[in-house]
Image 1 (cartoon, rainbow, N blue to C red):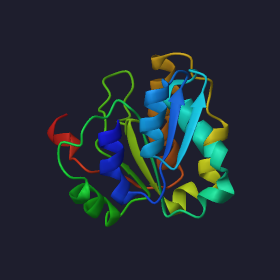
Image 2: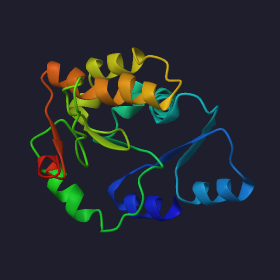
Image 3: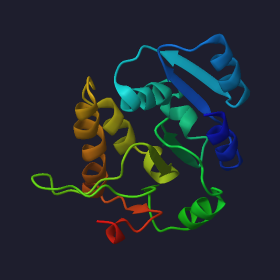
Length: 176
């Protein structure tokens, strides 16, 4: 995680790390060295509720001081390549929010979605009441399946139906 955090730091003005439940003193020291804020919370709700906790801890008004909001979890590894290319491309993309790729959905779910492991919101979306409403109506997450169903698969159609545009760094249709 320290490698990821030090690699992403040039693209972030502030980093908040949320840990679900347990952190050794050595782990805490390492994370504090690579973050501006460290939150330790109960291990409930997986990444979706950890993201929500960070959003609530900052508060919607404080978030308005930022131009982008990046939510990423520990399932991402690397980076294998420098983040510069991805951020340059996506900073110029005609979108309101973006991820690395979309996950194509087999039947019966027919809505491809951006997975929650790495999602960047531009200010027009995370400064909106729509963003606040999304997080405040998030159902309780108790299992991985809940996280996928109530967060990942809900988020893309939620914002699409409100007229927001999403994009992905990779052309996921090549691998569909």
